Image (cartoon, rainbow, N blue to C red; front, top):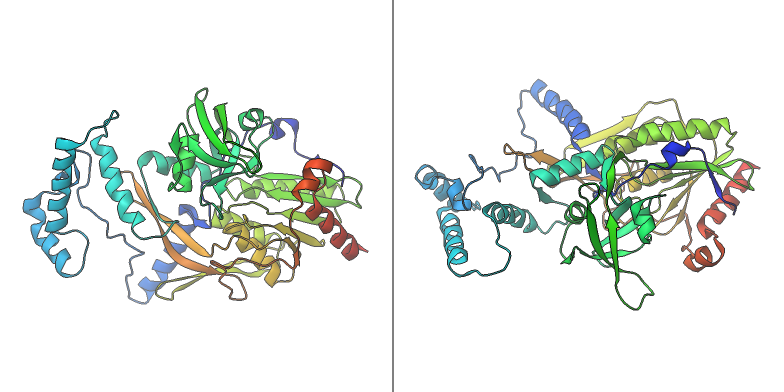
Length: 450
């Protein structure tokens, strides 16, 4: 296969991009609020007022100052605490007293070089409560983490210029893409590298958000990464100078050389900027006379639900794209009536790191028989999260529903099987510069274009 001729301008092509936050099928606020309003208006018309997953972590009057027991005035909360104990609730007089006992023990006995602040201990309580759910996709956000999550989903990023997701096999953060002319590329980071430590701190047990927040930082500062790379005899220690904040380029596109006008379009992740970038890329590919298209969703960790639904509406015939069901069986459908259906033969590339929103798109394409899926079985994340802001500027992200493809498949823990199973030949890529999955896609498209 020849080189990919990129259509984007030199200026856009040189812009840095940044890591994805576990975009993992996330229902970010724009989509969630819009759907919530629809649900509420329907229930109001029926005379029923229904709260949308109101988090009963609500610790009224929770603000900074002292340890957790100081966050509630015992005189005012003993009655409600006792009631919580009776009905199986978490907050009770006993738990508040135990937190006080723990604080006293820490104050009297704990010794370490780095002092832990009261705010850090408070955040630890909240994070621990969400962690106890045993759900790797639910987590508590500090103010800083929330800002990073929102900015990342809007396509605003800064840092080293790499995409980060989670390795399913190792349950550690992994580099799933490195941007052109980025600090990450200059430092020698490669796709598939496992982030073992950030600034000497082990990433074991960290969520994707926590790893990303540590890799990011102010422009010009240094982050030290300890990397595990398959085939290397020892860990790699890399020092990378962080870059300035930029708008992420999530779409790469071009016409494949030495083909009969076959277009190649890769979506790295689904952000707020992705729809416009996709629309622009498709327009350029059509100008070049594209007769078939390869949609590359490999190692795409997911992202914004609104973005993937909008893009699906530009590929599929009008109709249902995905639907969700919450724990009460309430169903929310996402449909599109766009008249922009892709009119050329399509092949979709997937792998074990294609997750969440990318699985929504691949699953819908497969259900509508709109394209051929080539690669390996996808990650298998068929659940949806929503971010709930709290009054003090923090937030909690909770799993609120499962999603289903148009035919009714929930692929959580299962993934989407390709129509043509083909493992990626890494040796051929490194030694000959050949992408065997792209080559197979070209063969399939050439057969359909005849």
